Amino acid sequence: MSVRRNPLAAIGAATLGFFREIGRVGLFAAAGIAACFTPRIYIGQILRQFWRIGFLSLPVVGLTAVFIGAALALNIYVGGSRFNAESFVPTIVVLGITRELGPVLAGLMLAGRVSAGIAAEIGTMRVTEQIDALSTLSTNPYRFLVAPRVTAATLAMPVLVMIADIIGVMGGYLVSINSLGFNGSIYLQKTWDFITADDILIGLTKAAVFGFIISIMGCFFGFNSRGGAGGVGRAATYAVVASAVLILASNYVLTTLFVK
Amino acid sequence: MTMAIPKLQLVDIHKAFGPKKVLRGLNLDVAPGRSLVVIGGSGTGKSVSIKCAIGLIQPDKGKVLIDGEDVTHAHGKKREDVLRKFGMLFQGAALFDSLTVWENVAFRLLYRDGLKRKDAKDRAIETLAKVRLKPDVADLSPAELSGGMQKRVGLARAIIAKPELIFFDEPTTGLDPITADAINDLIREMVTDLGCAAISITHDMASAKKIADEIAMILDGQIIYRGPADTIFNSGDPRVDQFVHGRADGPIAAHI
Image 1 (cartoon, rainbow over the protein chains, first blue to last red):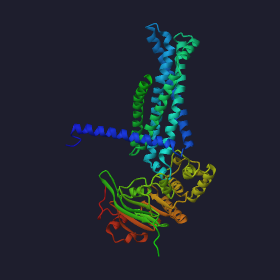
Image 2: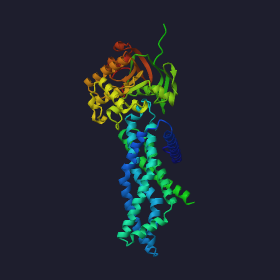
Image 3: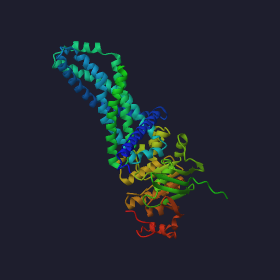
Image 4: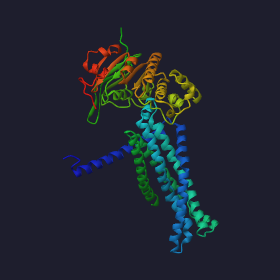
């Protein structure tokens, strides 16, 4: 009985296909990491990617952070007031943003902006034979295309998240002093008193992992795109979906590790 | 008298994609300084054969020899050394969108050989002049050029490092007849000037006649004919006759 007609065979084929794809992603990621540490290293390309992935993502990350910080402060105030615990607003805002919301939301925004962009760009290079052209010009496409994007995303993401943390806390601060009646200097004092270096480091570690995921997914789906414009569009979609799912899953795993 | 070692030799190359056998024991060679054109219908294995020669695709079986040395499984530094001997003009030119015209032409000098940008730009402008492009196109992006100009830039990129073997993949596809003829003239001129070997694949018989010393025909993944360019229209092989005269009726079935 063919795979099409036999449901068990279809499930088996889908399962094997899933694990095969995971294996391909793993091998691609290993080749990408190796390319980051083996000469030739294209400094100019890395700086260019820092500009595109890091600097040009600042507006979207900043806007996300300020609104999330503000909304978080309002929600915590409403919840806290049920237990006469309104004074915890600064503490929970800063912990929530630095440990969780800053890296996760910046990661998800960059999954949309950066991962899709990388997949579409490299996918177009694939279908127009530009990647083959790189090889014929004695240039390793992993070193020239993958390594600069992975290096830049992995290093830029913690910087972006650090900025998102500051802007997010400021969002909560502005709402708290303007709408919720908090005293500004007491709010900042409480924020500063409760935050620890570990909270910040945990958030930045997550950010680096998310940056790696975003770039490697974009590169993987771009490299493997086939079949013209439709294939490039699919590559961009898959890159965003895979990046978002992996960010949320790895966030849970990392949080579990850090909480223990 | 000793025979010159071929610049490139493909020996008994087999390649399949899933159940589809594209190359079935293909043998091909080109001597230094000679221009070989491979003709054949769509899907007969022309592009796959040159991708195997360059190393973009690994053959399932067979050998690729460059200057008599087996490079079939060469990788890393050895593969890069082999690729230094090659130039390639892609069907769609395959220029890098994110770079200017001169950066495309000088790509190998900038990113491989580490030449200073000013020196690389001067070399790129010199090479653009060889393909009849003025210096003012150097700072444009590839998207601002016509199809014919993109092909010229692709040709300049292929020849800038003075390769020993150039591959031309459908060099005149998509061009009007006058531009196509100009590209053919340039290819002939560049191959003669550089004294390099050339392998071109094309459907275009006008192009094949103009740029070839010899023409080979591929059918079902094998070379079925090879001879001097001026005898291709009198080959005596009905399959070659059908193809070069562009007839739908004959021993080769048309694929529609």
